[in-house]
Image (cartoon, rainbow, N blue to C red; front, side, top):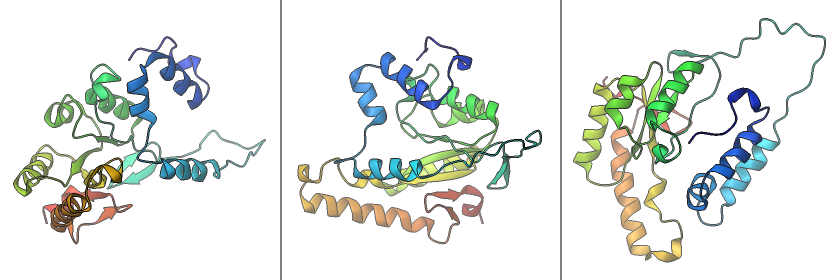
Length: 211
């Protein structure tokens, strides 16, 4: 997705959002900004972020401000991680490769969605920094194990373990039996990560899985 403005034309994140809203079609926009069911969690997250404020300080020396952070043993320029977005290729040419390169240019980690092109291996080869693979724990156990092994072999630093897809977008659309079966499968898949160090209960270090 090529926006009409250049990076220097934007002063706030809201301006990025407004430009994207004008550029994207309705379906893609709804997919990008939407949330599950009543979107209650999305609203609560927004309120929680709005409660955070920077205290303005004037006449201070800011020539040597250091916002760097340590993330799984890797130094990052900012305490920021680029979240996984499926179908990135519909939003930006190059998909996951573009995100990997952008993350490297800002020296921040990124999480590759497992349903985003150009794929785990191609993105890994293009990445130059901390990279995390989003792992869905649903489905066949052998397939999940294969994804784990491939990510580790390709040098991914951590996993973002995603389990929310065990429940449909609206609970009324599925029987309790089906939902219960999916949750049981999810719990079985997650057992292979027991004892693995995690960040915010979502990310597991690949280094720990080899020990």
